[in-house]
Amino acid sequence: QYGLEKPRGYNVSFHYNPHVEYHHFGSSHPMKPWRLTLTKQLVLAYGLEYTMDLYEPRPATIDELEVFHDREYLSFLSQVTPQNAKPDDPAYLSFGFGGESNDCPVFDGLWNYVSIYSGASMSAAQNLNNKQSDIAINWSGGLHHAKKNLASGFCYINDIVLAIQLLLTQNQRVLYIDIDVHHGDGVEAAFESTDRVFTLSYHKFGIDRNGYPFFPGTGNINEMGPTDPANRGKGHSLNIPIDDGIDDEQYKWLFKTVTGAVIEKYNPTAIVLQSGADSLGGDRLGRFNLNIKAHGFCVETVKSYGRPLLLIGGGGYTPRNVARTWCHETAVCVGTELHNELPTHIPYIQAFQGAENGGGILYPDLHNTKRHDNLNTQDNLHKLVTQALENLRYVEG
Ligand code: TV1
Ligand code: CA
Ligand code: ZN
Image (tube, rainbow, N blue to C red):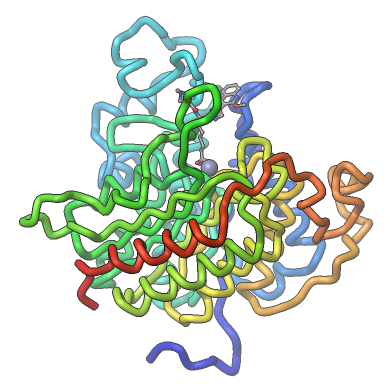
């Protein structure tokens, strides 16, 4: 059933509601929904819309979101506005809003924003369920930190958990893979008590010079889910902690070796890949040194296993490179190669032009923007892989 190269290529669907673009977290906030406008413009400029089925999904309803989130949290989230918000209301802070970091601000249209990106992930999962698509894409989703009653790390609703819940109605085992530079803690926690979902996250892990852990501070190699031997979910999480500055060859080897072992052992019938673009070199919040094609290699690798695939976005804080990467990965899904010279007639072309913006090409060398020395030695990475493979002992295919 799996692994056979399909002669006609893959049916790819693109789930996107353009209203998501017009939301603003606040002027200095690193999360910029208009990176999705840039992504869409590149996808259109390369003509990729003719190679996929396009969907404009409706927003999710509060009842649909309640499959994962608590009712009290949802009713607060659906009613709070910048005008009526009371930062001294105990509910406000306890649900994760505002606070000192202001990672999760209350902004205009917040409820609209969260129900749009969630609706798109659910629409993508439904397309896989009814076999209309082999690969379904939602670049506006991937908000992996949200908990059932807590906003965290720019994430309010966990669209990934909701999509996986839908996939579980048709699949015995779903594999979740997360290449965002941050640990996919919310998805891991949501499925910690089941063996029907395996979560695998690659991320920066460690304490900074200033003594703060890299957000969210979890995801060391020894964190494999619950330790209670009676818990079905024991050992069904794998975390790959990585240090600053990892390069293309190291990451590709690490990803291929570990992901390959997990897929072969767990044998999932569907895969969800969170393709956060903050693992790229030069990302405003990231620490890695990956180029676009090395990031895309992860999509190629997962695609090559031929299982139904839900591909979603996530982090990514240098918008022009987020757009380049997700456009490239859309092309990887449909199986075409894109020319390096960007089409010049596209809106927002200035965002990609000039030496500091990547010189008008699709694949600029992001090593040139490197701000982080590579602290990963071959020896460390080999030990990490050995430990990772050992951690798979609880998995029965
Ligand atoms: C408002 C304005 C909020 C400017 C937040 C960077 C800002 C950050 C801001 C920021 C920022 C974080 C923490 C600190 C925990 C807090 C989408 C001890 C310039 C999936 C979320 C990172 C990543 C949260 C989300 C992190 C994702 N980094 N400027 N906030 N406290 N929060 O460290 O995984 O990509 O940075
Ligand atoms: Ca990750
Ligand atoms: Zn991230």
